[in-house]
Length: 68
Ligand SMILES: [Zn+2]
Image (cartoon, rainbow, N blue to C red; front, side, top):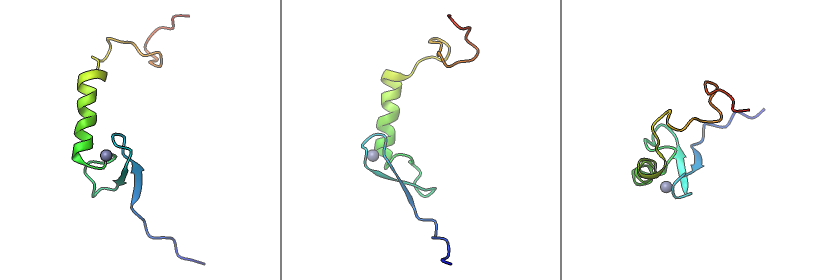
């Protein structure tokens, strides 16, 4: 039998730049590759995507009565 492989650093695509991001506790910006990408993503949220919770009911929200 072969011994289990040591836990290799897992890499995931950075949501911002699509580059390889180290998904490991040593990478404090995970799943982003860097602070720059993380900040860029949060900036997008704050300026475009962020909405006040409850102002736009989600269709997936079980607390919202069905409109059927
Ligand atoms: Zn990145």
